Amino acid sequence: MSLVDLVMKRKMLFLTVLIFPIIFVGCSSNQTSPSVNKSASTNYEELYAKAPAGAVPPHFKGGQNALVVIEEFADFQCPTCAVMHPVVKELQATYGNQIKIIFRNFPLPMHSKAFDAALAAEAAGFQGKFWEMQNLLFTNQQLWATEPDHRKTFESYAERLGLDVEKFRSDMASAQAKNRVQEDIKRGMALKVNSTPSFFLNGKPVPYEQTEFTRFKALIDAELAKSK
Image (cartoon, rainbow, N blue to C red; front, side, top):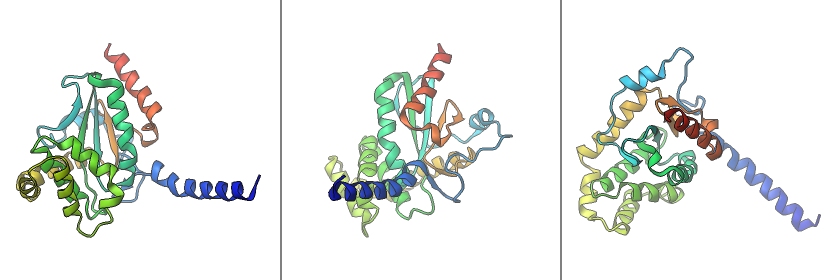
């Protein structure tokens, strides 16, 4: 092995050590295990049925009446949520209307810009561009999360999407947008969500280690088989 190859190998090892925790550890509000706060005594089907509705109507992709429903609670400033974003998109592309994927805002207190990002997504949603803004926020997370005036960046995204920027700015500050985010948070807390991303598959929490694409796909296939 040449000296150049050895140096490159060490660099790759160093990057792997840095990236590994981001991929496999979620963002937790209380530094506990990254996932839903599970308890052996918790009846999640009952809990799911009784939980507050969250923002109505919810943002979703896929089939309106799909028999397999995935509900994601995410924080736009959480690095792991950004890592999971393309996985969720791939699942939606794979199954189309066979599944329904619901997105819920769950900004964590530890992330100072997450609530504003959720408001930006909701404000874009009022002009029919929620999913486009959601995608921009996740794919550009490292940019806006380090900027001192992140709201200006959000406005630049609104302009890029062809939105009325004045209305977007007003909607971000509106009670309607804040209420939608807060309703999602209430639902997440009732479901014992304590970290992001957290997923529920047909009302059951998905262990974070099962959210890798092939494992998640296996869970979905099993649910589809049951529905048939």
